[in-house]
Length: 231
Image (cartoon, rainbow, N blue to C red; front, top):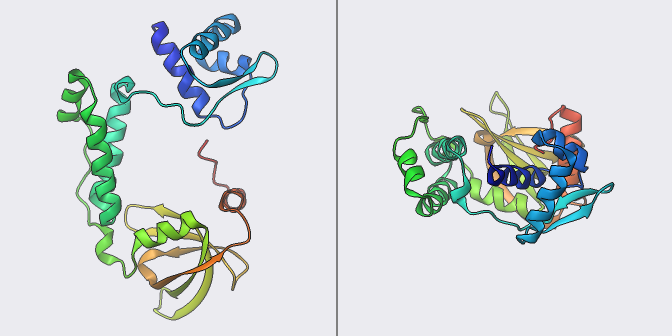
């Protein structure tokens, strides 16, 4: 591995950690000596990377530091293509368009050799039915409500078609191959509940914020469901 590649790996490793991480752990994950790790951190700091910390206390990369897309490797490009292709093919209109636009922006700044990799993609998304055709509600509206941390009134039908009204705190949308699941706190049940999006007949956002932060609620949901944190 070249030093440039190692420096890039170090930035990516720091980006995965939200809290300070020890130099010893970073060195072990990179497979280098602690002395090399300290030199690499000094080099990155000298090049403008906002890395804070010191030996014995740990290091953290401040949010907002960007690397040019031309630094993507072949596997990373293929992962982006596969993920963007799946979203473009299976998501609702606004999200599908966002996936295509994002990929176009990345491809526009790639060097020629990586651009050819995009054109000769090894991984492809198989055929499937866009689930947007099955929805009675606007998933873009659901996403905006989640970001705003607002309560919502929903009309929900169970497996036998019986409808009930619920006041919920929408937390996330989970994407499966054949269904979308709204993860929410249900005021009626006083617990987390999972609602199939295709069974929600009405979704009405309110102006009322739910009383806890979404990040804290999601953390509690993950602990309750045994779902690992994304980082």
